[in-house]
Structures are given as C-alpha cells and as structure tokens.
Picture 1 (spheres, one colour):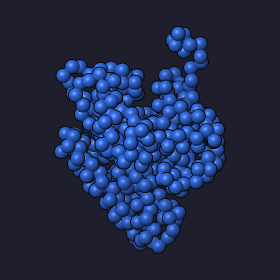
Picture 2 (cartoon, one colour):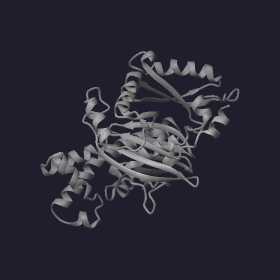
Picture 3 (spheres, rainbow, N blue to C red):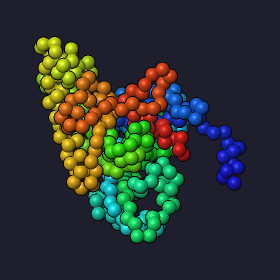
Picture 4 (cartoon, rainbow, N blue to C red):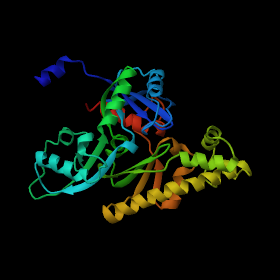
Length: 356
C-alpha cells in the first residue's frame, strides 16, 4: 500500500534547510535535477541575540524567520549544538529493543535531568546515518560482535519550543537533525581515509571525525569566530560590528599582500592569529582524545563555516597542527558557482529532506 501511495503522490524535488546560528540564520533551497543535487538559492539574515540559550526573544525569532521570505513551508532544521548532549559508547550484541533500553540507561548517567524530560535517540556508527536501518534501528548486530553507538539527548521542551516558533512563522519542521550529521552529508559520506570536519560557528565549533565515510566521533568545541572578532575589537578599540568588518577583509597568512602592509593590517592579522590559538588548542585536544581514547588517527582537516573564509586560515591550521587542511568544497552548487562554506550545515539539512 505504501509503495502504491508513493507512486500516486508526486515526488518532491525541492527541499529547504534552515540553520539558526548565533549570528545569522542561513537558508539553502535545493532541488533534484537529473538525479543530481542543485542549489536553487542560498541566503542569510541576522539571527536573534541569545538564541539557543534559555533567555531569548521568541517573537523576535518568529519575526526574523518570517522576514527571511523562505519559499517553502516545509523545512529541515537542527537544534543548536549547545542544547544537544552526545556520547559515543560501545555496546555488546543485542536486539534493537534491548539496545533502546540500554541506551536510555547509559545516557541517563550523563544527563542533568531525568530521561523523561529528554528526547533520546541513537545512531549505530557502523551504518549510514540516513539509512532506514540506522534511523529505525531495525537491523540487529551479529551475535558476539560489539557495536559503537552515538547517544543523543535534547530537552523535550527545546524541541517543542522550536517547533512552535517555526509554526508561528508559517513553517512546518519535517525533521530536526544534528549539525554533525548535516556536515557528514556534505563532506563525509564518500570520504576515504580519516578526516576531521570542523564547522566554525560564531560561539562554538562542531567537530566531526569521519573514517571511510562513517561518523566516528563528535564534539562541540566551546570556541568560534566570536573570539576572533573580540581579538580585533580589543586590538583596535572598535565595536564588534566594525571588528567583524575588518576581520572579513584581513589575512592571517604572513606572506599575503594584505598582511605584508604595515600598520593596521598587520595588527589585525596578529590579533586574528592570537585568537585562532584558542581554536587550535581545542582542535588539538580533540584530536589527541581521538588518538588515545578512540584509536582514530586523523589524516586531514576540512574546514567550513563563515570563519573558514578568512584569508590564510587553512594554511595557518596546517602549520599549527601539522595536518593537511583545506576549506571544504561541496559537490552541489549554484549553476556556475561553488557553495559558500558558511552554508555547509544548511545544505546538509536540505539534503536530509531528500532522504525523508
């Protein structure tokens, strides 16, 4: 019956991903054209102060979403990383029903409140996160084998709150996804070897380690582009808006013609390098943990997010971490253009819509 209904209902070809960040809301509309993904549009507009915290103006966010003129009323979005608790754990072979119960017990050890107040999910890390088996946990693991499982929990109140916000803005959220899985869809699904995908956000950065196309490790690092803005603002005694403007036109590469100019350009470049030191520390700490605790040896780094567009940042990270580093390039794009790396998460969310 389901297959018959699918044939009768026209197949959706347009999908929308909405990434609500601390500084901006990024929207990507995609369509399926000749079985390939093509971006129809990508745009961003200001977010709301305090979003993803316990204190922000809900109505202001509703208005912001309405002002975005989002063309589709069905969207895929994600819960901000600050609200999501993730842990990876090993479990013995067990049925899906047994695993679901074991996950509730295991993640309950890390939660500040009862699991009754949390939405708890899990992903088998040896499966494609978008596969039906992974989503529904319908496949049992072979007898005697172990399995690595990603445990996820988010406050139920947060899910209901953002469902309501989108509804008041005239949209329906067909799914709330993980930032990490959105990044995996864009950069990691067909990846060979072991790489760390790092999306640098405003207040925090998402790190995802992928090995041969499989997600192995996720961590939210408590540092983002905001620290660079503050470094420039402090160095030049300007406000955040001006510091952000100066940052975007600067370089951290000492051999770049911008940096080589004397005076203010060099001062900005030095401030940015100093700010990046904090990000590098967090990345190094995460990679060391992966190596010692997860037996994962990262071979290269893929950067995304708005800050990844900073001139010279990939070379700087490569210099400091001694790992090949590049700014991620998505396979999909606007006709004749590439994908702005600031939209990586939003693109991955739109791609999730195609899997529903």
